[in-house]
Image (cartoon, rainbow, N blue to C red):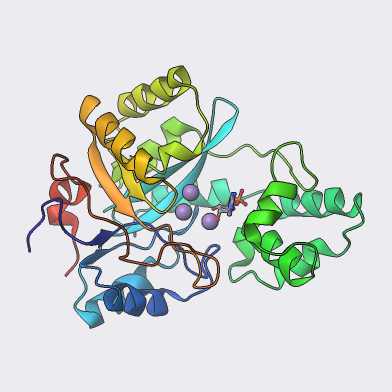
Length: 287
Ligand code: AMP
Ligand code: MN
Ligand code: MN
Ligand code: MN
C-alpha cells in the first residue's frame, strides 16, 4: 500500500452512533464505492461504532484506522480533536469519552426550553426521534427536527437562526479539556489531530495558542483537506502543517447523503509537500 500524500484517505465521518444518518456498515460500503483507499469512522465523543466499522471495512477489504472526534472547550470556544489509530478497547479512552458525553441530555432539555421561549414547542421529543444513540443527542438532531417541522428550509438555515451563540436554542456547555482529549487518544496508542482548524474563527494569536498547547500535550496532526474548509484554507493549513511540523489529515466530515456537501472520498488529495498522518500510522492500519 502506497502511503504517500496522493492516497484517497477519508479519515473523518459520522454514523448513527453520533449525528450521522447512515450505519457504520453503510458508510463502509459508501466509502469503498467513492474510491476511498483508507477509511476512518470518527463519531463525536463515542467509539461504540468502532468494532462494527472495523468488521465492515475488513469484509470489504478496505484498510481502516480507528477514529473519534472529541469536543473540547478551549478559550471559551468549542474545538474538535480527531483521534486516529488508537486501541478501541482502551478503557481510559472509553471512560473519558463517557464523561464527555454526560450532560448532553440535560443540555438538550435546556435547548428545548430556550426554543419554546420563541414559540417552538416539543423540540426535545422532536429531536430525540432522530437520535440513534440516546447518549449523544446533539445540535444536529435539533436541526433535523427544526427542518422537518417546517421552522427552517435546511440545516444551514437552522445554524444561522438557531442553536449558535446569541441565538435561541443555544446552551453553552463545558466539554473535555484539550489536555485530557489529547492525552486519552495518545495514551491509547493513537494520534491526536486538530479537526477543521479553519472553522473556529480564531484570531492568529488564538490559533497559535491552540496549536502550541496542542503540541505541548502531545498532539501531532492537523486536518488540512476537509469538507469544512474552502480551497483557500487547503493552502493556508498546508502551510500551517509545515510550519509546525504536523502530520496532515484529510476527511470529508460526511454526515448524511441529504445534508453533506462533500461525499466520502470526493475531496482533492493532500498536497505532495505534506507528510500525511497515515504515513505515521502505518502500523495502526487494520487490513
Ligand atoms: P453538538 O456537539 O451537539 O454541539 O453539535 C455539533 C454538530 O452540529 C457538529 O458536529 C455539526 O454536525 C453540526 N453543526 C454545527 N454547526 C453547523 C453548521 N453551521 N452547519 C451545519 N451543521 C453544523
Ligand atoms: Mn456532527
Ligand atoms: Mn467537527
Ligand atoms: Mn465531524
